[in-house]
Image (cartoon, rainbow, N blue to C red; front, side, top):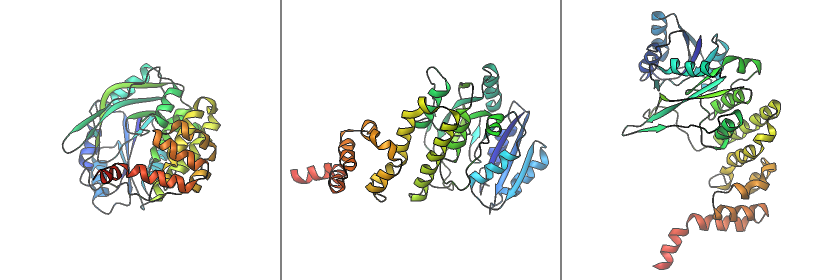
Length: 322
């Protein structure tokens, strides 16, 4: 059996499509666990109506605690051999579960991932991510710094990975709540497989979804996640093969401290200080390397000057020409 967990919060506009999408699956041996996280609209009522129609649906309600807390509740209730989790404003192909499970069984995989598309109001963008020599380390590097998303919804994960290694969502996160769980599971996976089909549709039209507001809480969450993930890497014994990617990930996590409105060069030097010696190596361009070189030498005023200059260089050049 496959366990499917859906956190629900004020999703009445999309719930019918999301739930129906699961009930139309060609593979029917699943449980759909709906966790209402204190919705203030009709979401809970809609969930209950579907649960009355189909015994495979289980509904839980809790006071609003955030998406990671909702998933924590759902994961605690799972009974399947594999699990996934998806969002109430998305939907999937009818063969979604069947194809993922087929691929997992064919390779005896602990994790299998598929392609997906991002659906905008005026276009659809396909996201495909085949990896050469798909082994655990290659996969994890792609997840950490290779641009591959560490989300639940395009994956099936063997439930025992989470339970045997006591992996749980971190309650209270505003971002990357899926990254820490999915990739902590991957650290212990013996086999990861790829299903080269677009099976999931990621909705980019929901204007009511939580917006990624520019606030420091978001960035502090990322730093906390990277800290927790480093501990899991150490625990798994994969420090050496993932060392370089971990340093780069740390630099990415604290990059916000190099720019307004959170610019703080001293704080940047202190957070993940072991990664500082790699900053020049992983800098995106020559301009970034120059700014970082002054920060590392504690010449913060010079660093700020060049950072500001590079930011407004084109405007300055146009002004001088005039």
